[in-house]
Image (cartoon, rainbow, N blue to C red; front, top):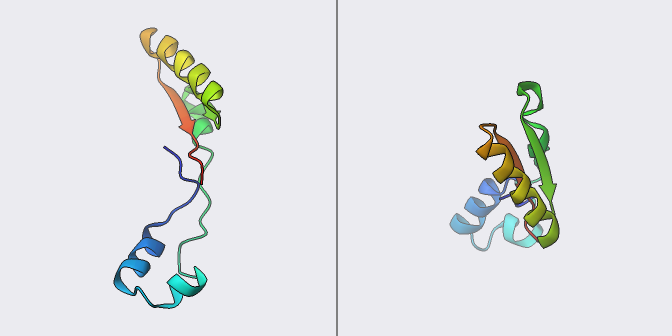
Length: 83
């Protein structure tokens, strides 16, 4: 599941420094790292993939993934979560 960012550092800052700068400004090291294009990560290895941002796209991507895995191939589904 793709939450569209790397939030470990921001979450840690908020947890340990509840009244700190990260809470007030959302400025913290590592927070604005964009996610990779997961659905393309298998391309060099002949692995297909799809990005799904809606329920219909997710259903279609999962159907394709099932077909591919039943045929003995891997398939990546990048399920983007709403913010």
